[in-house]
Image (cartoon, rainbow, N blue to C red; front, top):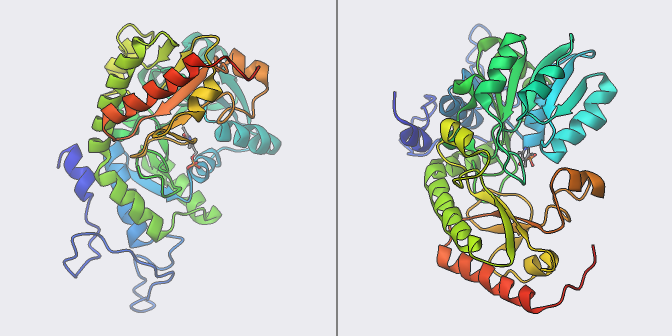
Length: 389
Ligand SMILES: *Cc1c(COP(=O)(O)O)cnc(C)c1O
């Protein structure tokens, strides 16, 4: 078998291409001809499967060491498909810092359909164990949370889950299979917002699922085909192309993160930095043990009196935007942007203060990124705080 970086570039051939084209073709056809009634086609109708999507689905299955992959029209469609394997009366345990859209889906959609859940700090194994009920079916969490980058051990959660015959479901968006492969650490299902690192260029919305065994794969395939939230061939091709440079992009992003953190550690306007790759951080050991690296996202607090809104407004190269994992650097204020839907007291309880900045670092020259942070810090340290929060 080929090694990881080769798999990123080449994937696995699906035997559809007789032209010699070095890239797998994009098939726009919605329907496929039968040779005869006795010989149904492998691909017959493109919602059920098509060669362009299948290439990507095989590739992500290979990269994540699962038996089968599935591509969806968004990360949320992928998460919906995974949660749709449960039945009314089932109970789930979920991390209390999961993606807001996932929480909304559980709390405002699945709960009404009698799939209940308990949100706990997934880092606390005792709390997770205490939340197990007779009807609990799975533990769903993100190994690195957003925006504080708190780390949960996939190994430990999977062990606990197996002991209680529960499924372990991991949203691996923040790490990608380059940095962590949850199925090899014991998880059963992996989901991705491929909108982020996997596609890597902020030009596609996509989601992926990988199943560890044939039984789960069968269930996910049924839902993918029955609900129909599939990824289009064009978008499947964009994700495939993004995946080819995943390792290179992540290496550069992580190098840039390391240098920006080194710079910020010496800035008097910066109070604390959240990145598990930082020696001395609370989660450093788990991250070292289970991940190849900690990715391109980190967050930090500005000291009281330094206006965080003004700071992000004065950034020039860092674009003020949600999302992450792409070639360009983005900055956001979780309190005002990605987490604004939570009531203020919940934001504060979750450690999301108005002073918290999240950076999703791209692949630009780090000297320019550093200069941008520096000039914005200069501006805000010279100005009195204007907005009152
Ligand atoms: C963005 C994101 C999602 C949702 O994915 P979409 O592609 O936006 O639907 C789910 N989980 C995490 C961790 C994300 O960052």
